[in-house]
Amino acid sequence: MATKPSPAMRRYLIRLTTCMTLYVVLLFAVTSLFRHAPPTGALAWGAAVLPALPILGTFWTIFRLLEEETDEYIRHMLVRQSLFATAFCLSIMTVWEFLQNYEVLPPGNGGFGAAFFWFTGLGIGGMVNALATRGDCADDDEEAAE
Amino acid sequence: MNNRLRVLRAEHGWSQQDLADRLGVSRQSVNAIEKGRYDPSLPLAFTIADLFGLPIEAIFLREETPE
Image (tube, rainbow over all chains, first blue to last red; front, side, top):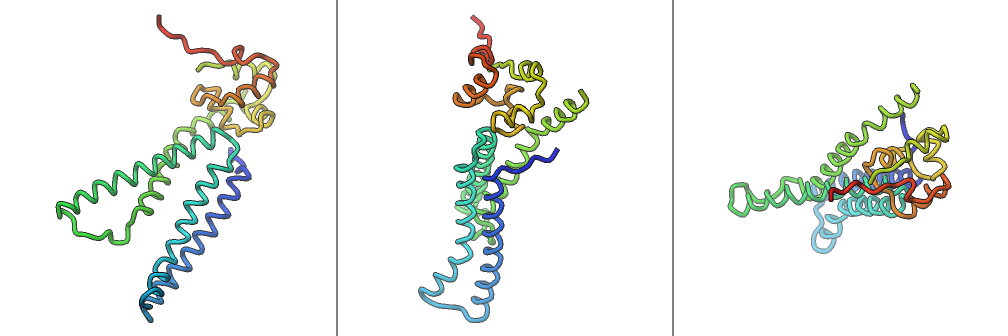
């Protein structure tokens, strides 16, 4: 049975969609700017940072969700998911850095930064949570049959 | 921690969703507490106890510890 999202979750989804839309727009705009008329000096710094801002906004939306969600069990699961994401990201980045330190891998990250791995970890953490609570649906069926 | 939530809920003829609505939490929370996968906070435990008109220790039971 589909569960209705809480008010905090609805606000999170609106904020997340806004941040992701801004990210795509800014990424295309700044990439195009650097390709056709590369800025210099402070302008280059300012322009290059622009696509990162919606990513920071996404972190903020996640921590707002943890703050605003009133259901303590859901909050507990979200914290678990975030910790999984943090551990996943730190593990990959640590191993990667050592491989680079000993020049087994070339420097640079090919565009895959810490945020990419943190969000990947968040997705995997969400799947782990979903698997852990999968029995809930079975209980629903069980109750409906009673 | 063990608990008698499922039994008490059944005595009242409530579904998990009914109990969740009365407690102001999600159905997943009720399910997790009933199955012992999640121990509620003290404020939520008091709310549950108030709803059933029982002391907390009549609902939530200590795990048996080997002596």
